[in-house]
Image (tube, rainbow, N blue to C red; front, side, top):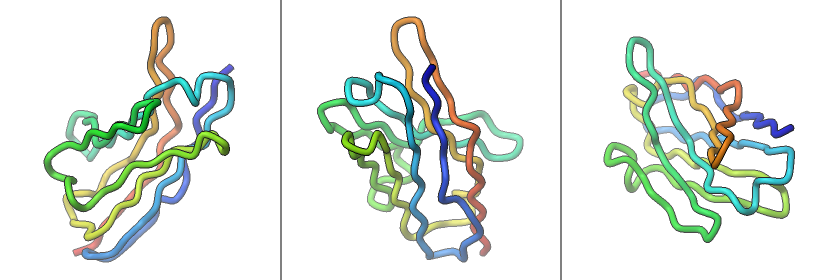
Length: 115
């Protein structure tokens, strides 16, 4: 059974930084693309960043240049480094691993940016 556990959220002032972590249990991690999503109140969940098994990355336009996704396969962990945070980054952030026949989500971690 795969489990994803996010951590690192919190309250930060605008312009500050946070590092989110997603620890994965199970055997899929190193061969799987890993995604970070976020969902703000009243809005749809959106893809924020993706890292493939080979290390290629994707970012949604609103976080380019501010967020960095990375992975440590030895620790089965994916990270999201968030810098220059803005009030509009406030959301619950979720880790996701998806593939044929599976779609795993973590419980989410709250990020609140005060302006």
